[in-house]
Length: 195
Picture 1 (cartoon, helix red, strand yellow):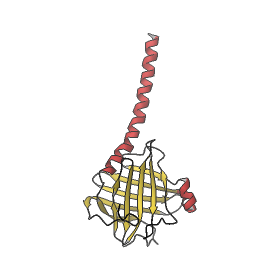
Picture 2: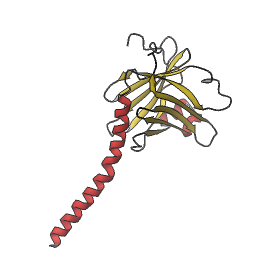
Picture 3: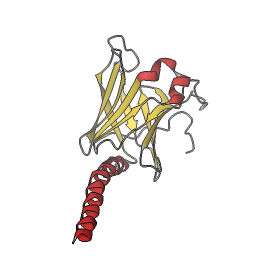
Picture 4: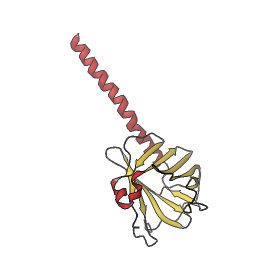
């Protein structure tokens, strides 16, 4: 009887552990699956929050285009008016985490001096939000961005938002895209011609 109780106890612990681990892992999978659903589509965005002195996004047409989708990598060019220099690159790692990088290009397609910064999720996040604290590569490229935290909110069929907060400062950006209304897909971003 005691052996039976021990076996039952072990099984209960294993069951509870899997219940606490797998639902979290599934959150990442749901987020990734919902992002994959947007492949090939483009959406218009608006500035939801920005510093008062921001001139980068203010008054410009903002378009995100989920242009390239592989099993574990999704690339989303982000157009700011006529500026086609930015692409968000999300990579699903083997451990289930998601890596966000910012691929910045010049008009001739060559990488910008400030490029490939971003961060890796530290946990499974949620089905609608993934957070990316700045990684070591970011600190090498932009020392002041050491406390950056980016996050993406994705509410299926409703909106996608790209967000940045520099912890310990007032620096906060948020751009929200309406997923209920597709827009015309833009031309290739800089460096993507022929792809």
